[in-house]
Length: 94
Image 1: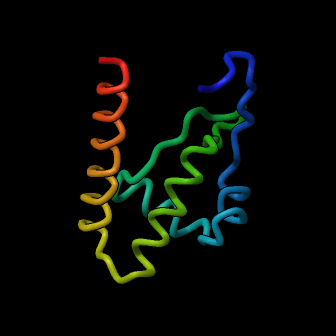
Image 2 (image 1 turned 90 degrees about the vertical axis):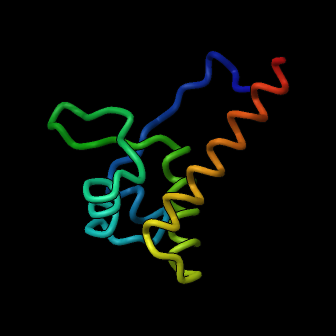
């Protein structure tokens, strides 16, 4: 469980690119064209900012793409992973 006082420092697109070794253009393509992730906020200049969870999601996307999966298959995998996490939380609360 996360501490409620924990401050999450968001990452810029450049920082996400460095952390994941995915070019900024590819990140923009995945975000804008395929809606694989979204920024959590924008800075004063309107630049998108991303959470650590988005960085982890991008690492999974990269892994799936490097294993040969097409974007549609990647979306399906991410949806399955998301559904299983939601189901697990529901069972834990239940």
